[in-house]
Amino acid sequence: MHVLSVSSLKGGVGKTTVALGLASAAFSQGLRTLVVDLDPQCDATTGLGAIGVFGETVADVLQNPRHSIVHRSIVTSTWTKLHPGTIDVMVGSPKAQVMDSPAPTIQEIWRLEMALAKVEREYDLVIIDTPPSINGLTRTAWVASDRVLIVTEPSLFSVVAADRTTLALEELRKGLTPRLETLGILINRFRPQSTEGEFRVNELREKFGDRILPDFVEERTVLQQAQGAGRPIHGWPGESAIEMAQVFDKILELVQKSFGQKSTGRIGKNSRKVLRLNRVLRGQTLDEVLKTEANEDAENSVESILGLEDDQN
Image 1: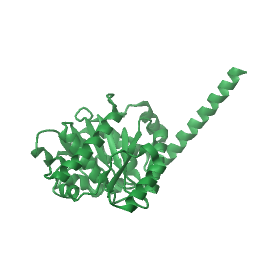
Image 2: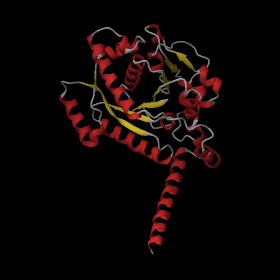
Image 3: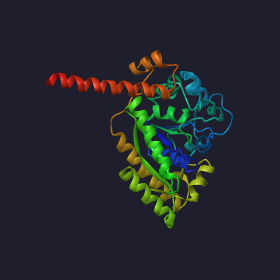
Image 4: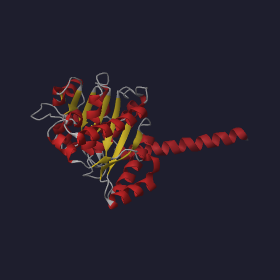
């Protein structure tokens, strides 16, 4: 099972639309797909047709990731009415906002990782729709992920937001989860005839180079129409929908190439790193832990250099 977070630290860039487009592509290709809706606005849950009152949601999972709670929080999308396959959603909830602390503890940050470990044999791909912030929910998603797709738009503040995201990801990767990698930066809501848009795209390319994905997602009303109707873009009629579906197919292909053939296992509650951090640092915030880990890495590097010098002498 592979896990991909779809993230942006700037709201209103169409992050959920991208997450649902990729889920649609995965479902159309027969991948057993789970969408985890961590955004308290719950748009991904609605877009997957999961409407109603649910006994357990992602908020309950983040409080107590027991096997029974995890499974009850996952429901089947109505997309399966179009054709057979597996496309499920871990139901979002406004109550998840309570867990979106700017200073989550190390114990809290592992919980989604633990939850996904309980279903890793049931899915090929997990897509996490994160909130547009750098707080607890987003970082909980990143700790549970193998890759992060950064979504941006060609606008004035897009470069700053994308830069903040890449720096935050690198800090987390170095300090806590080495398997985490940035898939790239996807430009969404692109308008081909916009001079301002072209200028901002060039600005992003100058800053990030080949980290900008080659395919852009154009601004098309058909994407909002399909999302609002709780339908996958691959099942929406019209030429525009077909064109958008093909774009998401190409992006999914990049995702799969990035993952390769090697399956990545969840860390699990008995991992040495989890046991050590939970035992020694469980009451500390994530930022405190990252600082501690960075200091240890620096000390180890100094010791290694001194050791080499001693050997040479």
